[in-house]
Length: 238
Image (spheres, rainbow, N blue to C red):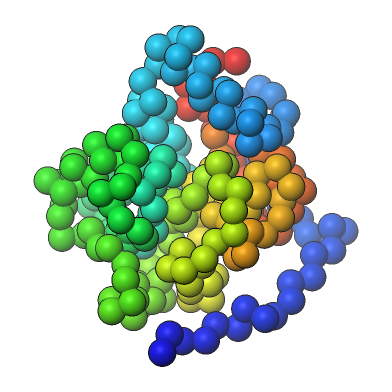
């Protein structure tokens, strides 16, 4: 039987008592984007200006690496989409830097996006021993890694998520919230609705979020999920 996490605990958010730091790195606009605005900005960069999507992914990964390089032991949690591709690229750089890295993939890696697959192939050649696909049998190993890491990188879902988490994804998020001492979210905490700030079944409660190009509306509406926020430039034209 899977362990029972204390997810019935209510979290009370008092905006007068919650304080976060927001830092803009190479970004000169405080505007907060919706899900559609974020999607449109990516699409414009790729289709209008011809910027390869994997280049934007690489820039996003480097933005995160710059903010977490002081840590030594990482558990990086990915799903087979663009956010997970960011996570694999982050893992690559951290491995090259000599960090202790373990990557945990939720879902079927074969169903990943093209950019996810590209970064997975690179990692499979660079450091295949750090790659793990999470399932019921090895979930205790995943939990142990969450307890032992200095930083857990949440690269499961990004701004596009609009449905409740369930199955292994929900279970993993609940374990992360319970066991990891320091979570850093990539772009937006997994399970947080980008538009409404609502918790979609379960949502990561990050100590810090590195978001890209613009602040996200959900992070402003529900700052208790994202913690301190760095809004980073990744090469998307204004």
